Image (cartoon, rainbow, N blue to C red; front, side):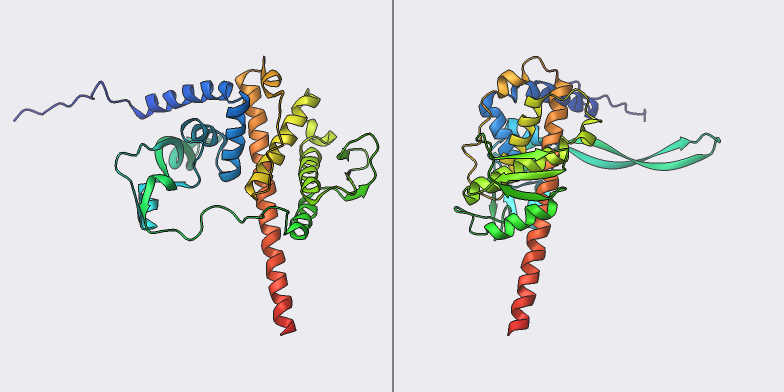
Length: 300
């Protein structure tokens, strides 16, 4: 019996072709992301998926900006849920590990592990049905910042510089003093405005100090403000604090003329800074709650 030869279906794309297609989609997406409404959608997606890669937050924004919690078929099955019939998945880039043999300078060969990416599909919670999940999303702080003291304490813990309150002249709500390595916040403001301003200035202290700017030569003042405003929006939204008045009206004009590489660098700085702050805040809140429980147990 003659060997049967198989040929690839010309209509079926290879993984390399699918990766290229997603890359081109991302290039177009980055440029369109800076239309005001689309940019706000991306910030909101980042607040729900702050630990996702930049590329995947952009892809989710482009396909399903209202997504709240995503996972693949296998994950939903483990959680007792299944994807509804007819639902279309959200295409993302999933990391995977692979091994390659390399030769060092002495001619010795060794096996090293690398990370690659492949197209994958995930589905939002709203696209599934089955067992109800008790908790989706993050810890919530509501309305008038009823957990203000905890949140303020968490922010002071993650701030790289000391914080003080003062009567600031000229109408500014706060500022970061790079020479003194300190943050000043206008005294007498509402709790919500204090938290907003503090997050904004912590971002400046982390990303826009003299030391940090050595690696980002030429960063202009407007870009610094875009980054700090954006990080503040993501962090506040993550903890369900009202940030609707946090608008960046000049986002379109700011992004005009910038190439994709510049825009992605700024977006990555925003995403990674917000992720670091949110992770730090959550760890501090957990420590505070455990400490309070211990103190209550000691009083009983």
